[in-house]
Image (cartoon, rainbow, N blue to C red; front, side, top):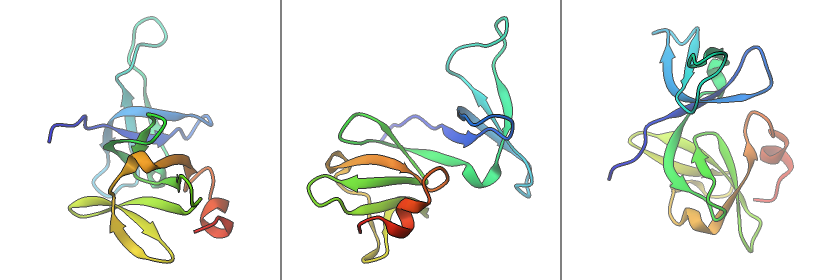
Amino acid sequence: MKREIKFRGKSIHEDVWLYGWLMQATDWSKAMIQEFEGKRDGGYDLCAEVIPDTVGQFTGLLDACGNEIYEGDILREQGTGKLVQVVYDAPEFVFKSNQFGYVFLNHPENFEVAGNAYDNPELLKGGRE
């Protein structure tokens, strides 16, 4: 299976997500994302430090609306409203649910990205599962 390898992380300077290549210190004390979508400030690629805990890898999957699904996303199942979090459990991405534990990331087309664990932690606590 061929898929695009990319990451996202939240900037330490602005309330924005950056998407691209990941560079990090071996101890994860610092992480940087170099965006490869377009150029900024006179043609230079943006390379900025991100909050290490927010870094997540693209799963290679799209939700029902065509949105990319990343590690750390919270997905809502269409019809039932059940919420699951996308986590990496080597060697694959899985859904994490308080009710069912870890289950395989099957049929992402039946889910929509509702938010993520960093911007919307309330979904993990009070959301319907």
